[in-house]
View 1 (tube, helix red, strand yellow):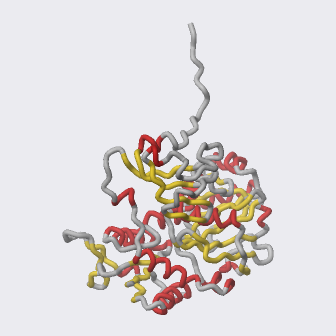
View 2: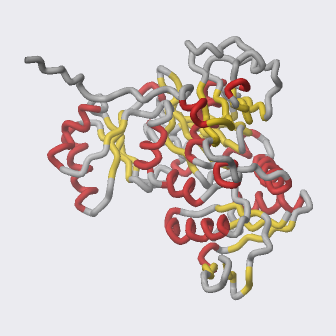
View 3: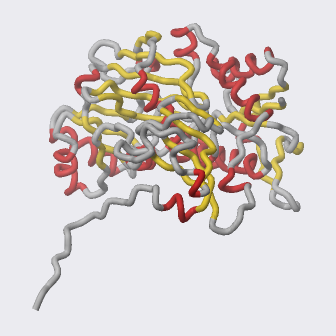
Length: 390
């Protein structure tokens, strides 16, 4: 495999480890400065130039793009995608995860636990916004802060109002989140690769500091992740469109609460704490995708009119629960299960004797009209309208 790592820090721990892991496995690997690219749209097919040379010969790219070059960096990744060069993290996935508001909006639509969050622009709305998340203390976050920078704990209402007003006066957009006191200055970082967690650590804040980032003096310990936290981490990364991600979660009283999904997670803390070859897991995953690429049937299959792909959820009260695929009636309705997702397990082309369980997610191909009846209807919003008589 010919792999390019997109990074402006070739000697950083993470970039060095990824390159080392690739070379150890016999792959060709180069670290390329993202800012040295030129996007070439002058010819008949899209291309990239790096120091005057064409880059169409790479099999895969691994983006490690900082927030300071987000716009140009994602444009480079998007160009690689258009050239059919594999990337585990797409340009859209990187952009979505970088914007804390956008990421929170996306996750909130998919039954992922998140701290109560609000976003306001008008100073007059601040007090009501803080009340909506449960009152003070609250955590105030810049939309694109990293490594704990731009994250402030406001213990009192007046202090929160002053901080938000000051930040907004400098044209900064901020989120207001509920302070999860039970987390006690701790959080969990799960490193997701593909459809599994390859390593997890608990990070603990130093002294009275509530931010647990290692860059702020926090300590780490390796942990075996609870299945609920593993499922949440994998689903959060998948929802954001990332195959390699660091998912940060708080330990809430009611379960995991996702704080952030990082598209360029640092490897030093988690490798040293766990002793695991996380870089090697990432390289192996990319190599497998290059050798056996996933077929995106939504975009690449030329299919007959009336047929398509949809994801169906087996609800608790569904007639499918407890039935084998053969007895489910799906095939009789011209529906084929391509992949069955059960918590953190994935069953491609499941056997006919596989018994369906509540909360299974089925990626299916078949007649759209047949599948439409199995997709849960959206709940209607707003008050009921009474009919007027007379």
